[in-house]
Length: 412
Image 1 (cartoon, helix red, strand yellow):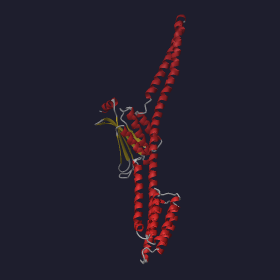
Image 2: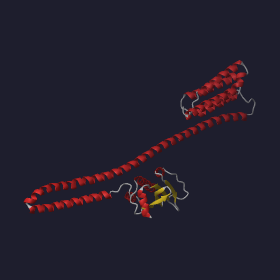
Image 3: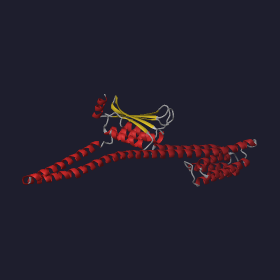
Image 4: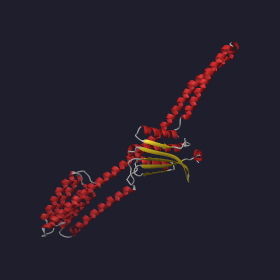
């Protein structure tokens, strides 16, 4: 049994024990003194109330059995009070029935139970007269107390149900948020894989072109050179022309190889500065933003892990600017920093959006995603509002390896 289940069980049992104890306390004098008929009837009534309390549902219910049980207990209480006990016990127990009905019956049945409860209570006040010759205001106050108990327990039940519905909604919202975060992470990883697949596809294309053009030309050269061995003795002049043709084919093949090498060399990986520039240009072309990207020329590539984090943080930051800030200008700085723990890259993104200083702003999924990426990489993430308006995002990502030391030396 879990701790939560054990706690609910203890509450369930303790509440019913307390309620039954109050009923026994209220009936004790009538069960131990007076006529035998009155004592016997009161004991039977106490047993019925014990069963009624034991059967009480944990929460408000729409089942018909509990309103019917409450109506039955009301009839028993009123009849015993009018025809057997002739005392104030019935009117006191009616308060208990009103509280039970108001707190546990839901829907229209709760309001329908109020009418017979009020009627039975009024009948006992008129016939039994528990206060004797007390002024009418005493009876009116007693009656108003019953109405207050009934409406109070009814409203408390409604508030409890609304609180439970709100808690369930928050739990569902948290589950949906977690699912959305997982989907976002999967989408980001799929985006990286798609970009890597595009690079591989481009390299495969270049490989096929080399195979189809240069490979064919080299095969032709091999065949013609084999034929040239025999022709050079029989037809020297024709052999000379054939050599010139072979030279042209060779030069053309060499040019194609050089072009393929240049294509491969210019195919930057997704973590390079060119990928960041392509991202910035894409956002600028598809929005109304004017973006200034400050990137030192000596930092054209870095470690894969560092580059992926920088790319994703910048992508999320620009997405937030486009969606939420209503900014017209963005400035981006990417620079190396020498921290006590080692070299790192610092990414700064500033916009002139609508956010103002001291304005409340809760971190949404995008901000949490950027913070999580930086912290997972061993870095840090901070943001603040700018004067008079706008936002500044600063992400610091560790930059390990020989590339960092070489770049820092160049920067010095």
